[in-house]
Length: 79
Image (cartoon, rainbow, N blue to C red):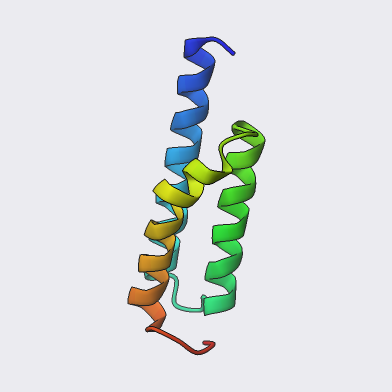
């Protein structure tokens, strides 16, 4: 993959993550389960774009999702 293609993929992932985090923060009918599904879908996209970078996603983006979910729904329980 050339540099331009890698940059395009990084931009796509970053934009998708930012959009999903915003949805988690503001969508009134979203549940904790739905938010977790968004995290799973974002990780799936990351693995399709960068097949060997699952650990990087877990270090960079998963904590942002966890924080957004905690801020929205609290520390525990199912909503």
